[in-house]
Length: 476
Ligand code: GLN
Image 1 (cartoon, rainbow, N blue to C red):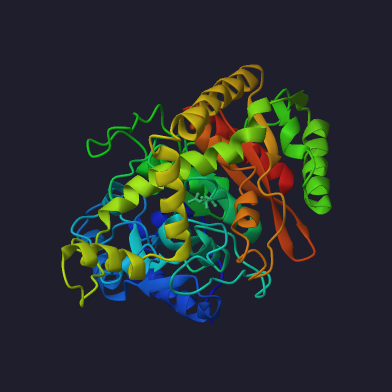
Image 2 (image 1 turned 90 degrees about the vertical axis):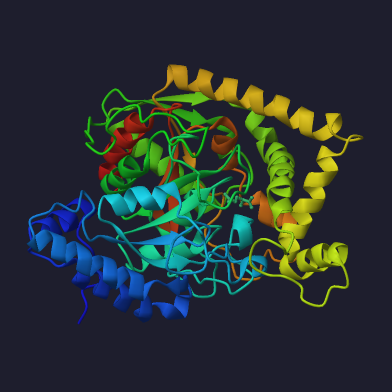
């Protein structure tokens, strides 16, 4: 019978490098587990042929004495908005069906350069617009802890794949919470780096000033190693920053003396009782372990959701304008002229949520309303950046829940977009301010996991990961 767990990524790679384990066997195990969990529908396509070929090359190189790298033979799964050779890149949207990427994303290239092997592409809300995977144009992914509930989104497929052990890690993107939110709902670790730390080149853009790429893993060590490989400046993405330091060599400095800011607004009304209880218990345990806990206020975080749902659609409407039916994927065949071809390709190809965001985005950017919406939202964003920096100058980290609720029922929020947007209320602030943030499994309500969100300083990813490792030890 196939073993249902994975050793740590560092151990797996070490075993492959030393010849104790074969890369082809790790890929075989991953493909087997993908098949075993298919009833949960996290995967859009596997890259079986390409993955096996790469594994054989890696094994052959090792027998010739070459070193394939720090992630030698480790299988992983990418959200289907990463450009990867070997399968179509669809972003779970009908308009991109059949799109064969002409180049690969930098993140994938960097992982491959260290010997990691992409085995599959995972489901998401189309173009990453959503919190449940129900906006996928293809199918909805199911929560591994309760099949009648959503896994969270938009990186729901990647998250479920890790929760079901289909691979030791998966990649997600986080524009307003899409790594942290599903990680919270599925009980795994989801890491959103500082904006710019990982190149966005070759990842289908949602909101370019908000998008980040990050790992979904079983623990903090694994997250740090994958992040370390992907991080750093990239000439293909002018917003990237240098990796400030080695990120994977984590130090558990302990909790004693740690200064923790509890964001008052994150524990206000609207939280599920059990989420509040788990968060408060966790804070109490950290206090018992010697942490200094301070209440802090981010007054603008109350406006963060409204601000996000102006700025994000504005950027979405601009980023989606390139899908005109002529250059990528789907084209409406029976159009009578070019204008109709544009219109009908977009009408048939885009789902409801993409259209909704295009309409909101073009509205808030239109000359008559720009000052009233877009400009105001930018002002709020600047205030939030300042408030977050001030709170973090007195504290090492900020802590609160990742999600106001546990996994909700499939269909529950589908007819009510505003209700769906509300699920992001605790995650969007870190995207607006660009700070790194992580979701750690902190407890459960019955079967359903509850995540703790830890927010760190701008470019303080190493410190945040070190601290997260200490918190993880307390939580286990
Ligand atoms: N749920 C949020 C949205 O729908 C966040 C999505 C994301 O982070 N990609 O915009």
